[in-house]
Length: 169
Image (cartoon, rainbow, N blue to C red; front, top):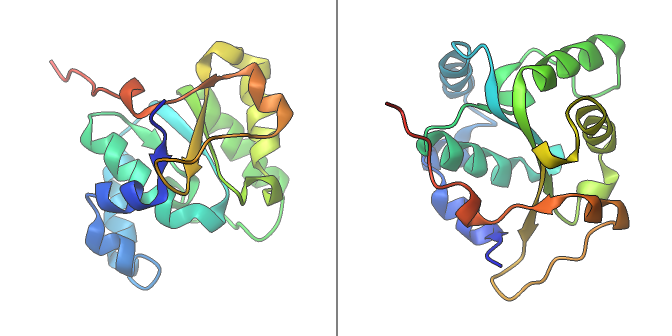
């Protein structure tokens, strides 16, 4: 099974310049934000730990280049306060999950420390079922296997081959 590796995700990034400067460059962030505002719905909602943002940024670019509309909270809704769990943030995330067809649970070694990931997974599964949830392991290298938290076994694993691209005609 071909999982996404950390080095591959860094290479996939169509925003390679963004990968190096996004945390310093507000105009680049705003450009990405503006490009996603035209979506009224999303193919994918990516649930992730913010500590994996360099890989998530690359995954976002990879999927967007394949023609998918992708929700990543800090790219689309840049005004959110990530420092605390609030009802305002929860309301917006519920709205964005309702607007999304599938949830990608991007799991890595940092995922278990996320405040939001288990909540997002539970909400999405409860509203749309487990068939629309994909577990996407981000592994160290091509020889790495994936052993996630036990409850993740309820869902299908996402492989690179699962994202062939979206026909735009």
